[in-house]
Image 1: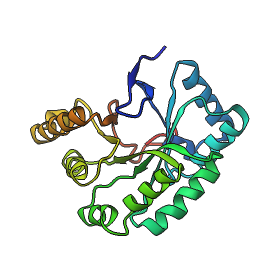
Image 2: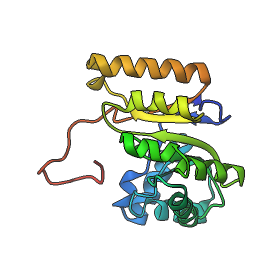
Image 3: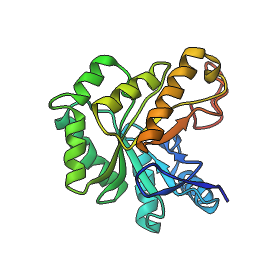
Length: 218
């Protein structure tokens, strides 16, 4: 069985491997069912989806409708304003067939302009707080891709008390001294504030490029 670790301040004891649902936007329901059931059988108790992952939320919701919800359920909104984020969140809840999600994450908050919009007046952070107050969301996180993300996340934590962060972390990226230093600084802040840290792309090899895609992954 996969080992577990306390997920920040949430009270959830999460499997050290989380099932990322990006590929479910390109899989059949049968393939999605098989993947979820295999993951659950090994003790995975945390699924990470997003509104922008094609029909991934629909596939997961179909499974939940038949089997219940034996896992911590996270999704993401890519909207930057409160008004649009509210609409997207309600759509996600309908697609997932749930009345709330455990974690709502601001998706890929990397662009400085979008960052200011999202965390400013009328931004998505206002909708996330409102959703938490109304029981639609239990916790709020932020995610991102790219070399600037550890620094952007550190700035985000200065602006808002996020419950979790998600960022790339791999042997290759950690050979970059600047990225490594930014990661270590972010981890220090997260540790001091009990913010959950999720890493992605740890086992990445290379983009598909022009090669035939033999799997429903990046």
